[in-house]
Length: 416
Image (cartoon, rainbow, N blue to C red; front, side, top):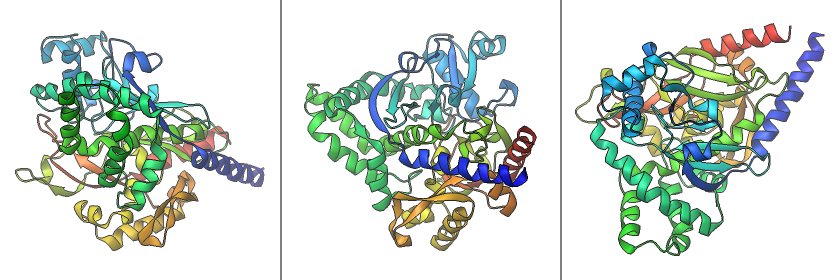
């Protein structure tokens, strides 16, 4: 019986990994969350990471949610917004419950325009609300001007551009970006340059006034716009990972996410159930005026990048970004090699030039993580633990082994 189950696990993991590798992801539209995401409601706010009670939630994530409650017109003051959450008049759920992902604190509300990313091979769709200081870091409410620009100017222009282009192949964009120096979690300069080249013929056909297109161009040159492709990455990775869900006997990790308190994972054969451990401290650099102790623990849905074998697992693709993350290039290389030991396959499309074009490891097997003690490293940004600030730094955090052990225990109990 034990040998039978072992062989079925291997077949299930092979199937899951093949579905990940064969997945495509095309940006097909941008719509308000309430119009794009099935089941989304006007009094719903979704957040990054696994489920968490309001009382346990970290301060920057609370502030991100409060900011959106006020922005949506559901409350006039932070105190009133918090009361609506406590009474249940405003519902709070994880992004992943709705096939959605978002960076850092990751708050998404009904009117926020989300990317609609379609996997045409398997027919699934994923969504992603782009990062802004208001919704990702719990920054001061005056930053609502950025959200307003995204909602009223950037999203309509990009929606029309996507229509003119008949969709944008995000998988191809990311794969080429990896070979041109992006590690695809914190570094996206190559992807951004390619995206601008790809959309240029289409954006000028949209008919928007020159002044509007200038604003959009200036946004892509700004600090905020540098991470636009990071949002596309998250939606694409979610679209590529979801087809591996719900495969009997599979021990492949289908999602990793953090809420600033808990680090959670989901496993293919265990469906939507979350297994958690403590969100880790971030090792890296802080910007001038901030100290490491100012940072909240690891937070965000962006670990969907490492779930797909990118980001912290692919850091050797970007030696300069390894340095920015506080890692040596050799340490980055060593970690990629270690992740091959706990993964099922090597990607034939996402290849790292500095490793003789070896493919990134794909299909993290929770059994191997527990057996070896090798855990994924997450390349991540730092949110201020008290909120009220933009990004304060960046670095690397380890996934906790506890969540993998809990998942393996649940797997054994299910298939005993």
